[in-house]
Length: 501
Ligand code: ZN
Image 1 (cartoon, rainbow, N blue to C red):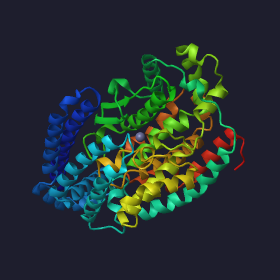
Image 2 (image 1 turned 30 degrees about the vertical axis):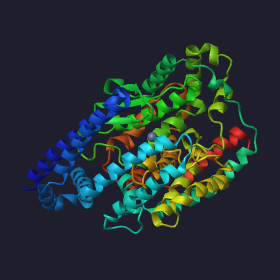
Image 3 (image 1 turned 90 degrees about the horizontal axis):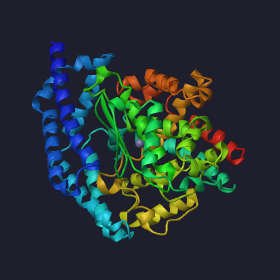
Image 4 (image 1 turned 45 degrees about the horizontal axis):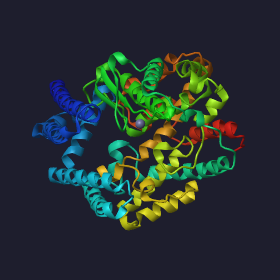
């Protein structure tokens, strides 16, 4: 009995996954090749596919299927995990009235346009009424979910299952206490030169170099491709079609290069998921935090290591002899790891990055709790920048209007994933290093397959089978914690800046 219900559920879930993938192909095209004039029709087409998927997911038959499969959901095997994750997605889809979903969509579409117009001049007054409405809608959205201790909990749970406002607050408070003095100590030391990264690097040569690096790390171009876009992303249509995008700044080598390694890290995670899980709710990265841990692991822990550049600097110099011929390994390594107390999150380094994220998380908690008024947001932002990073934005353009997130969707639930990613990446990498004590020698010798194989075996292949905390425990033997990340920063940047932490 339950076997036939299970196969009916799986075929229904595959149809939903295919509808969603078809919508994603349209989104990918919109962000890469579509003429801007196609936006209206494209929006309509994507919305229609979304409605079809939603209708199938919330069909009355689903209630019967999940009722009939309640015993399977208790099981410890793959099917048990599949039914649990599908049931959770179904519950989330049925919790929120369709009318509220459309209200949020049409409001945030207008808010996004207002933000793009007001951002260049930092005209916060122009976006303020939109943001006030977004806070209200975000609260109403969160209130649709019956089980929650904090208003932000359901929003966090959507992206980082198992985490709560409480658990993230505790983790972030401990992390902030460690980071602020590290940044302070580094700021007092002389800054390394990175001018050589800002020489002229032609776009075509940068793209070719980025593709060579991604390929050598193990991103499989036979099951993917790379295209240009404005805001780079990775996207999965199916197990054998996982694409990355990038952008190029001809006057900064690091933008395209580290962006490409970052997206390739996301993509290698997806490419490593067991084929058998494709088209099911388990055939995807398990959470925002774990996903970001894999992009950051490859971008920062591998891509900004001395071992990596022992391998790739000669290759970069052969491609860019005039620009990099006079730069030695030590200078290069120091330059790509320069720590700066900067205003903009997306341009920030490995050490300061999490401070930018935690500031956003704390402010969105306060906005949703009602303890911070939207009108007071710019000042609250600037004050926190001053206390954490020692810099103060001169305009909201580089302050609370810099990121698109709060202006294009509901507020809450997305930023924590970026910081969790850095934390989890260090923890996973420390375990990989313990399993392969000669890891640095392997990386500098161009052997990236060992690390990728270890990650695939221990983490990637499982997709979303295990909840994030359980997965991290299986990989590292410990629950998610900041220790490995702090150890990594102190060791790497202590040596780089001649500071004893
Ligand atoms: Zn990412």
